[in-house]
Image (cartoon, rainbow, N blue to C red; front, side, top):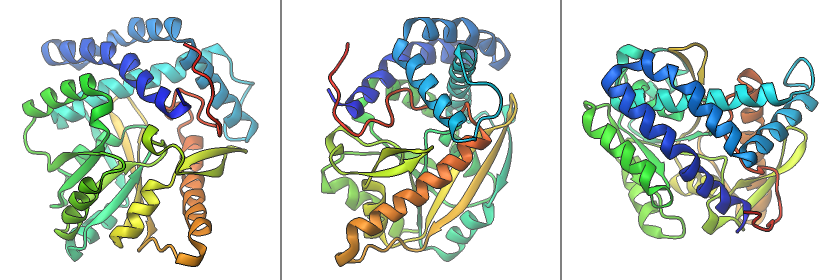
Length: 318
């Protein structure tokens, strides 16, 4: 099993139990009680998942070596803090999917870019990352922009978690955010995306992981001082859509507070036929540079608990 395949497996196994427990308590006892449960849940995750511990420590050490994490060389205390931040993101994710606006405060930097997309009616592609909470878009969409947002999700690879999320969504009111199932290698989902963008909607996706079926279509970039593979798919999709492309992250800055950062990425992404690989690499590197900058801003909120820097296909060590 390759590294990309393994992250799908870890995501399903590692997040489902904690999400089910937190969801049940959140709905019936409220957010404060649910937050108290994070410590034993994260403690169990920390003790039982050596891969997550190893991946977290590797990332934190790279961040430190790159001069983006001050202080002493990271150890297990920092790793637990990293995993606790992941637990908080799951708790917040439940609130976002339930539409609990009153549970959060949002500061949006760059809202005018989303408003411009809505005003021009051109649609847009939003590139996010597994940094902070991309689900904060569910509340951003409800602030003042009339735009409709569709989030691409690999629903087939985490069926149990997506069942939980679907149940939460059914309880929420209309937050102008829907889910578009992503099926790599099939033209149908590309046509659906194009249709949404042509209607003036926003399509959003996380661009820092390769799908197992497209692992060979990755581009090495410099990320935190070492080569790391990024998927080409988001840039190829952006070029095909020929629409404005935005970069967005939602950083948790307090127990109920998020800062949403929206930046212009390209308008549009262009890939000249003769220099296509080089152009894809430049766009991927631009994305990696932005991601590194926000990892420095929120060092414990990048949630890729696998060997992100692996450029080869390792043996499955289960």
